[in-house]
Length: 168
Image (cartoon, rainbow, N blue to C red; front, side, top):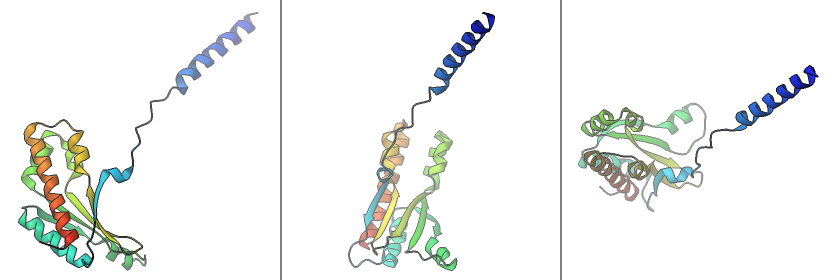
């Protein structure tokens, strides 16, 4: 009889324990990764080199410091990997960056701001950047910082548009 009671207790414990163990945290909400990016196709007749020249010129005009360039396709080709054009351009306004990071250090992970030039297999060339509207719209920011974030986003969009059209 003691054995049956012991086995019943063990069974109840295991059933109860497994009920708790099977309860998992709800999965993170899923989203379409394309929503996280803003992109523009280069206009007909605009070459990658035209776009790059326009991007750099427009950034200077709009007071965004050009801080880095990663010509990834050159590195890939040097390693024997066939790749379309793939380059990343990084921009920053140090004073704005300082204010954002002072408010919340996590913003440093989004800096510097990037615009990527990507050539697809079909020869189409795109300019892409993170969709800052998603961050701006979903982050509680003081009014001053929201204005800064919105201005930075608008500036990057203008830089990207200049590159896509080849105009500066």
